[in-house]
Structures are given as C-alpha cells and as structure tokens.
Length: 461
Image 1 (spheres, rainbow, N blue to C red):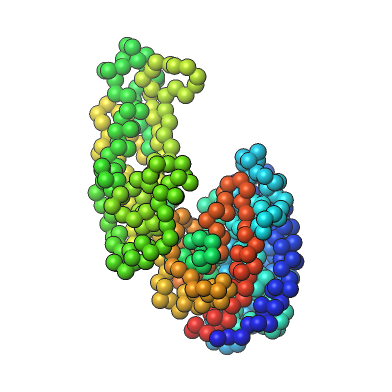
Image 2 (tube, rainbow, N blue to C red):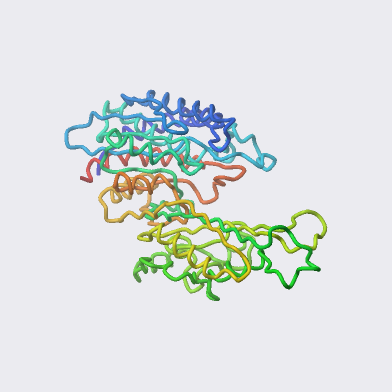
C-alpha cells in the first residue's frame, strides 16, 4: 500500500480553511439559467482559477466557449510514463427558487449539524474543491504529483452544456488524457461508499395535436369534432402496456439484459421499496416494468415519460369548449448501447401512427445524449475503488444512476475516453432543491479519497 500519512495529516490540518473556501465560493450566485447572473458565472470561473493557482497548478486560466466560461488548469510535470488524468466538474448552479423554503440564505454557506448548506455546496463546487485540495496537498507536501492532471470546471452543466461539445472538439489537443475523473455523483447511502459505473442517456419530444382552427362551443360541436386533448391522451396511453413495459416497436433494440450475478448484486443492496414509496408520498413503486426490481428500473432499464401536458381552458371556473390543440412534452432515459437517433425515430413513428382520425400531429425532437457505462474491470476503476476504501474505511459498492450528465457522454463520444465517476454526495443532499447541503464528513472524506486516488492511478498503468 502506498504511504500517504503525510498527505492525510496535511489535509486534516487544513479542514477549516477548505470549509471557508467552499463558503466563499457558495457566495457566487453562478446561476447559468439566468442571463442576469451570467456575470456571476464568470466571477465563479475566476474564483475557480484563483483556487487552481493557489493549489499549485502551473497553468490556470478562464477559457471562453460559445456560451459561459470554463475554468481550466493543469500540472504536467510528472515522471515520464505517468498517466494524464482529466478532472471534470462544474461551477454553475441551479436557481434557488423557491427561496421561502430555504432554512438559511441559499448563497450563504451555513454550517449546522455537521453539514454545510447552500446552493452549489455539493453540486458541484464542494466536489470540485475536494480535488483542488488534494492536488494542493500533493504539491505542498511532496512538491509534485504522481500523475499529470488537467482540470476542467464547466459553467453550463446545469443548462444542458450547450457549448461544451464544441469546446471539447476545439480543445481536443489541450484536453488529451488517458482517463477522465468526474465527481458529480452520489453514494448509495450514508456509510456506504459507492462508485457509479453507469449513467443513462436522454432524449426529448414535443408533441402537438391540432384539431379545429379555433376553440369550438362544446354544445354545438362536441361529439362531431375530434377533441385534441382526448386524441393526445389516447396516443400517450399507447406508449405502455398493462405491465408497464414500453410498447413502442424497436424501443428496446440493443438493451442488454442483466446477468444473474448483476441482478443479485442489486437485490443485495439495502433498498426498502415500501419505505422509499412512503418517502415519496406514493402508495407503491409501480411505475415502469413491474416485474423488474426497483433499482434495476432506476439504473439499468430505459424509461419513457410524459413530463407535461396542456391544452384547452386553464382558468377559474368552467369553459365549455372543444379545444383547438393539445401539447405534450415527453422524454426517455436511455441505457448503454441504445442509439438516441433510433429511439427518437421509433417513438415519433409510433405516435404518428397512433393518432386518431380528425387531428393533425406535429412532433419535434431534441437531445442526443447517449448512456455511458464503464467496466468495473478497468484499471482506473480499480484504482478508484482502492482509494475510496482507504478514504472511507470500507470497500465501495458498484451502482448505477438514473440521471444524465451530458458532458460524461460527450467525453465518451468525442474524446473516446474511459471515465471514473467517484462522487461522494448523499442521496438526501437536496440537489436542485431548497436546503442543498454537503455533509462535512463526506466532504473531508472525499478530499482524503482524492489524495489517495492520484497515487492509486499512478500505479494502475
């Protein structure tokens, strides 16, 4: 085992300073969704660059994109043959609304009960800071790193990274590396270290059903003119069968069935479906393919959801009409080997074919984010597992996540790089919601894990 007591002594002695740095960074309301705050996103990038310089990175600068800026830094002076690792995170944050539900100001890092509360505390400023603190420890204590590092901290992740792929393509040479490390995920549960080995992809549809040229009196025309809302509801109802399986021909093309050992691993995790249902305010976890385990549905199976539907009169009281149109927003989460273009096409074709007579259907599609999976047999994943065991005192479990991180897919598709997802957030951290927090034990354990990680990656060639 690589001796790292000197690094751990250093990071433990500097915990209060790291907490202060995170508090200061939270104070930047870097909300990428709000154009009025784009100057704060730039200020946040400058904070990240200043912290990179303080850590000892020999190059640190703000890089421009077609949208909001990226903070970039590098240290490329490791011994010949050492791997180059690109560390990815993001410094933009979600809007704080609804403010009234926060127990403390969203952009004031507030510590209570062993946690720091504030927007961006865990998603993702705190997890980026873990890496910068670990890099600093290596450079201050040892004077060098065992690997070459490049750090990319994006400013548009919370709005879907619209400029990131063009940035990657343009900066392909600058960003060349052997593996990408991403710390923007959570562990399975408190006191249960975890490595995420799969992320789902994402595509969208907007469906409009038009009927008469204007709203019609339902007494005169109801019963003889097709109702667009009813027609759309019928179309949506055809997307699933009675057992929750998606009924679109071709939707499941290339979806891999889990091996018995993989399903047994999932079944062994401490997941209480009834407790989870109660916490969500529902009677049972009956969405999707009901014969599948809930965690299998959440991580390893594709989904097709109606995210919104509207049409007709929405005001107070009644208005007796046949509405002229109805509109729905749909999305699908994809799993490894599914082709987003194919899925978009088969769902579109199914909806068009299921449209009742008397209405006109128009469909727009968006999104092309592929699912990503990393083999747990990859040497870098093994290195991450060893580092996490040393940082948190027990070996990690391997998990998936139902969510999507667009840049992870971009790294996979454009740079063709393996990726290690080594986040340490907790499931109850309220990301994207009021009272976002970062448990300080996770924060400090994460710093120690990253200090171990760089040594482990150097040995995992």
